[in-house]
Amino acid sequence: MKNLKRILALLSLLFLAACAPAAEPFQPGGWVNGPINETQPGASDIFVVTVAAAGDPVGIDFSGSVTSGSVRAVLRDPSGQILWEQAAPAVPGPFAYTTTLRPETPGEYQLGYAWEANTQASYSIVWRPEEMVRPSLTPVILVPGISMILVALAFLAYSLVRRLPFRYFLFGGLAWVVTVALKFAWAIPFNTPIYKFLTENLPAALGFPVFYLYVGLLTGVFEVALTWLVLRYTRLGKAPWRAALAFGIGFGALEAFLLGANSLVGTATALLLPNILPLSTLETVAQANNWMYSLMPSWERFFTVWIHIFCNTMLFLGVAQSRPSRMWAAFIYKSLIDALAAWVQVAGITDVGSLWMVEAAIAIWGGLGWWAVVRWVQPRYPAETPPAPASPSETQAAPL
Image 1 (cartoon, rainbow, N blue to C red):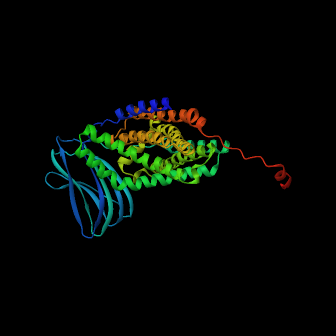
Image 2: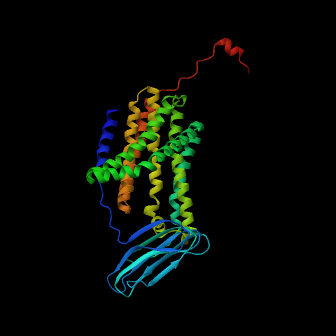
Image 3: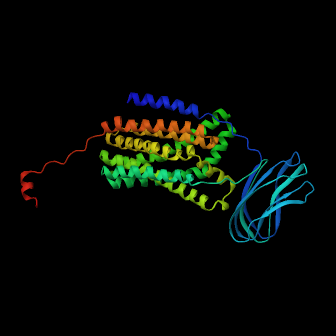
């Protein structure tokens, strides 16, 4: 236990150091989106686009979805005349257009949108002072979704081959669904105001790390503490080792499967219907054209499943030994890894080198979980008490 505590303490310090605030990259240009629900025609100028020299590029992406009516993007020159406009199709449905203009007259241009009477639509306008081209996609973008599903199926196959109690596998998956749903029910209304409060009222060197830890603690509260309470105060937690292992595998495998299925549906849609997606979505999906990106999700899911297995078997061990300290070890362990995930998302880490450094940290965390399950949790788990042998009279009376 001392070795395990020392490893957790050391990695905790490393993770807190990694969660230092990162400078957000400057993105020239602008972006806006929103709904349109208008009964009368109108227009709105949103951006001032400065063209410093004749021929400077102005890239524009206009996308959204029309329910009724008509909406169009409009660029006006310094004299107020329409230099360029692009209307969404009259047929209801999604649309997306990307173009690059090179105005010949320097000055300040107005970029916005206009709509006709009785228009219901959603829109997104992105502009950058550079050439904008919609990226091409290859079937490689399907690899993340397929590989995450394969990771889930591999753990399921292991459970079936080892004949682990399948109902506990299902209980673990159900626990993931319920706890994550409750976590999102809290996070959706509260995370944004908490983020604003912390980052606006505390120095950046303190406010951002506190927010990352807060996000990690949400995982600890909902995925660990809540699961512990259910196991502690129901018969579900009084289970043999094989059931505890099946529960942990189900918890992580279902997450991997659903994330993989969601990714596969999204990337398949992008591959088959790229012209209906916004440029920002295509650029994100197109990263998976690179094998260095496309292999990350399966790598991460494999080690994350081990993180879930360790945390959940620790909860069962705590119930079996009546020691809440096991729950707190799992609480800290999982909260810290999700604090790292929060840092990656909020700081906008996207370059492949930095992401693989994060994946290396996840591999270390998951590897520690695997080691702890095999070398620490399972050897300490109470052996299942075999049933008492029947008495001679009971044996004689037993039916054939």
